[in-house]
Image (cartoon, rainbow, N blue to C red; front, side):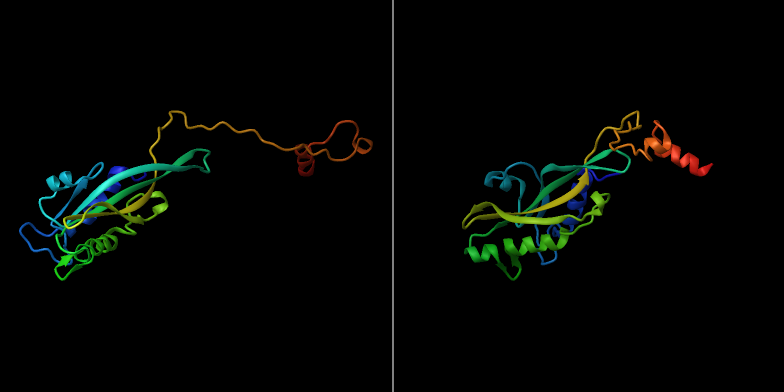
Length: 208
């Protein structure tokens, strides 16, 4: 059994949800987001304002999955190790100076402070049935949307490894591949005649 994109996404969302403050509550250090949700596709100011009624906001987005390599296993089969990535975007609305929006102040966390909290929450998260039980790992942080004096959105990207799904063949037998090598010729024609002795013959004689 291997992890699926859906199970990894659900584990990430479940870990991030507790960072949202209760409805009508006051944003606090432990729960700094007024909204936690999902996102898909590119990000634009109009769209994010439609989704997020309040800020700061935390948005989980699946980015992509790539197959790194095919790994042969002992049984003769193969598996595709896939690296899948998600971006967690933090959005801060702040009309003050850039320092206020990026770093924040008491009771008003900035974008960089929020990225650090997200890292603390999900970096090295162990998701069920990941490839060789590898943990989710942090990859990078980058600006996603910047409107100076208005809206600041930064995204932290994370990577997880899993075995990609494949078909289950009805015939699980595996054809024996070619065996390369040489046949040992023991002795010489003077001692043993014209017929060479093969290893199997030697072993048979030793056991007799």
